Image 1: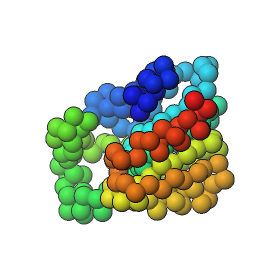
Image 2: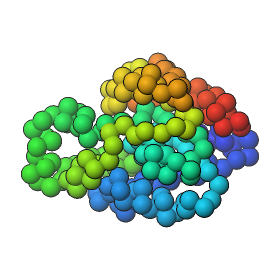
Image 3: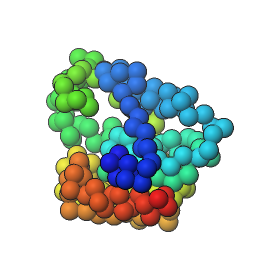
Length: 189
C-alpha cells in the first residue's frame, strides 16, 4: 500500500502495534499508546488495518468515535480470543495459560514468546466492536486464519459496512489492486 500511496505523492504512516513489545503487548497497551500518539483534538483519522490491526482499528472507532473518519479493514481479526483455542488446539491453548506464555511469529517471522496477559486483557474488550463509521472490509474467501464469515456477519448487520470478497488468503498478497481501488474510492484519493 505504501508504494500505491507514493504514486500519488502521499505518505502512508505504518504503525508498529507491538507496543511496548511483541512479547508484552495487549490490546489495551496498543490502544493506549495510539491514543497518546493521536490525541482526540486532532483531525479525524482514516484508518487502514489488517488482521489484528483491523480489529484494533474498529475498537478504536468504538472507543473514540469522534477521532475516526472512515476505515478500510483487511481480514479484521474479530473475536480473536474466542477463535484461538480452535486455531491453536485446545491443548496448546491450555498450555499457554499454564505456562504463562506461548510462542508466535512476530512481524519479522521470529518465534517469540507472547505472555498470557494478552488473552486476559483481550477478554476485557468487545469481540466485535460497534462502530458507525463508513467502513470497507476486504476479506479473502480462502482465509484460514480469520474466517470470512465474521466479516460477512458484520457487513450484513450494519448499513455502514461494505464487504469486498476476494479470491485470496489472509495475507491478501494477490488483492493489492482491489485494496488500492477500495482505498481510492473510500478516502477520495
